[in-house]
Length: 272
Image (cartoon, rainbow, N blue to C red; front, side):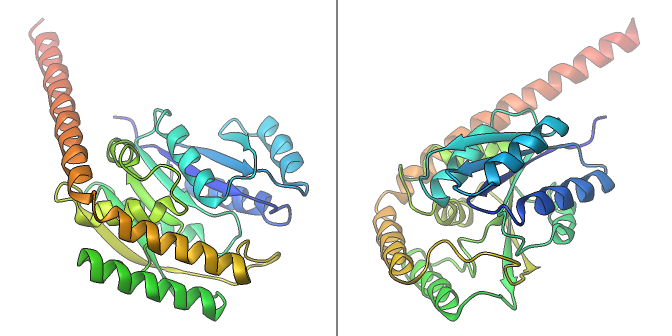
């Protein structure tokens, strides 16, 4: 029986100083754990040498798949990467960032729990970000709890694992053009009765170089936009959950039918 396989999704913007180290660390760690994998990198219109570095690495590494898009923002790059990952043959999809603020070492906890949970989310402890970002995460936590009555401490964390079948259906119902699609994926997973979720604390580090992409006024604007989208999404949540859960049931039916078919073929071969 083949090992479960993984597609890793990483958006990147102007990370010439970190991207090669991030990719190397992830590849070596996954190889050490004997996890078959592909890595998808979405270059969100970088203006430094990131693109040249990625092009050079992709000629050396068959597992690395790089895609370019005009600068459209972190959320758009994530959603594009997820959509591409759903087209690969791998069983699971994981998303993280390219700024080296997370360690691949924490991933093994996620991988070990993949059979029992369809979605697993990190929670940054001892978070190494400016105070304003921590305050915004706290506000988002409270807003989601007040509106949806669910406790998601780190709803937008870029460290999360999905079963591909479920992620495909989740993507079909998140708002078009959402500034932070990961927030809505978190809400849907925690509200769906058919998706078993889990949260795991993960280490968080200072950025080794560069600075956070959204700062000052831009960060506040992004915050208000995200909060408004979260509020608006509550009015269509039940409809989206019904559609998504119906698709999950259909997928499960076809998966079970395929298993039965394979078992019958094996039985016939033994008799023959």
